[in-house]
Image 1 (cartoon, rainbow, N blue to C red):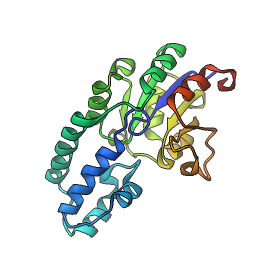
Image 2 (cartoon, rainbow, N blue to C red):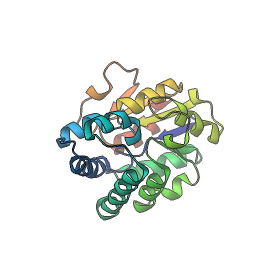
Image 3 (cartoon, rainbow, N blue to C red):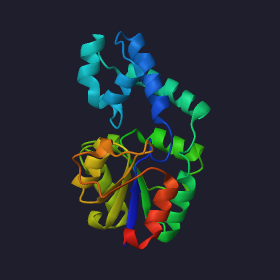
Image 4 (tube, rainbow, N blue to C red):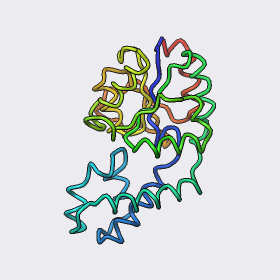
Length: 220
């Protein structure tokens, strides 16, 4: 049986990706980089904005300053607090898994930690994670490097090989696999193309399915 479960946040626990990327597209367009929503999602989903610094600066002709980032964060957070909801079924799945593994769960995100904490608190998930919340911004390398998952596993005192990682992007799945964990991919569209070519052990389309799969002998 898996001894711990490490969850990504955005797109797995909270339905934040369309909101965050919508705001990012707005501020990039205002800065001179005209992007469609689909293009913005393709470039930035699963990544920290700062990881695309060179491309942003090349496309906008402006430096990516702390003031620019703070203005983006402020607008993003206001929109999230107004519109954010948990992924359907995520709260029940986290509660069940938290009970099954004796509380050994963590959230390991590529986003900045204040955003992750704010989002989990907003949808009622924060009590399940406590201080087991990790951001790639605080690690030497962000996803797809394994650092954030290694930090989460170490905090829980569990060998990464005994951890299950739940991810919704190829970038995050690569991070979990590089950490030596088993990765299950969440793909609500009902197909696993996001994980093609990756050794993702299972793809599921609804959080109720995650809850049931984890409880079943197949998860052992």
